Length: 487
Image 1 (cartoon, rainbow, N blue to C red):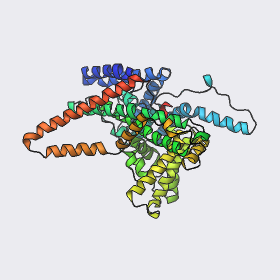
Image 2 (cartoon, rainbow, N blue to C red):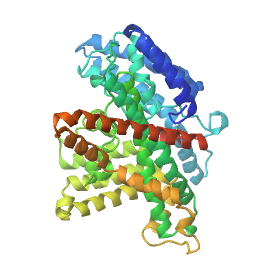
Image 3 (cartoon, rainbow, N blue to C red):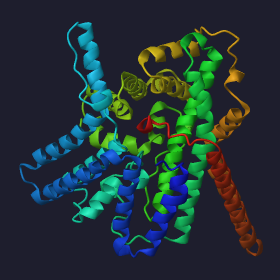
Image 4 (tube, rainbow, N blue to C red):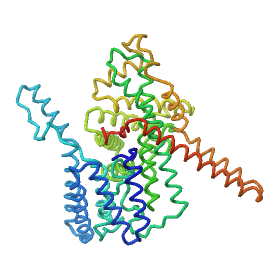
């Protein structure tokens, strides 16, 4: 049950929100926990037990780590807890990939392969398994490091791990900075309006921009290599880049908005990554909570940059390769991670200074070319398809003029692309801040009137955006969120 479905928008969410307001603070956590389990059951009933299992074992391990203080066996308990969480993730997320790769190797050696033990030949990926694991590891490690005490209430532990707005694709909350678990959350009118506005914006991003661009991107990437032209290849990757950003950031906006309406303050996950002037800056703006998690719970434990330069680059390579595999089980995802890691390492080594890319437009162009070239690996199914697409992008296309770009890029695609391009940069916040600042500088007699008028205009625009998005959603079959947790 995705956020962009009528069942969620008109049934599940209104009921959960209404009951949440009616209940007192004492029962709100229990109600949200029940809603989270129902959300999971409706989306993936076969693995509803997984939430209970994760909540139970991590609650127990957390209490044990807290009780052990500085006991010698504390490291072993943490190791066992993390290993168990990662084992569940590896089993569900990578079993199909590992079996396929082993059988490919045995076929080359002409020896019998491994028959799949799963019904239908493959295992089903449980909804949100990656993010459940991330939050569980954060919970355990933060207790181990004494950044925060263990939760004594199992309901709060389960709620932290399974809160439905962020269970599928984040944002990832660090346990030490988790907000609102006490149950006495204060929901002001201003906070509720900010949350509902954020949800509407994210909903519009998904329905009006991402889903529209997805049509052209899917059609172009489905073409065989011999049909691709250079124009088509660039049109496809441009549409996909914006599709992925508005799909993923749209989900984050909806999750953050839902959290605020329930009294939580989830961390920001995107900060205009297409405005970045380097790959390192891009990753400080893109999927921020994922990058922070990888830094705090993988890069720094490996030694970070505290050791030799060679070890620092090795650590960067491990983190980016692991990050790629966490986004998807396939060699193309690992290559995408290594591609980003290569340029992050080059920039750390002084590439930007050595190449004298000092002019901002040139730095931005370099960043976009590297980023979009990496998205070819992310979007294609295997390295061979990625290689064919790269050749087409950079002038070695096989397609002829009969395969014209306008067969794939329609008027609605061009409009969505134009709005997507504008929305990729902080134009709206700048304009909003400018108008608000201008109005506040007016005389006291007019200030209140024009500020109220401006607020009514913003509310009207949000209402129009919601109405247009609902109409578009109703007119077509809802498109699942693209990012790999739904692939």
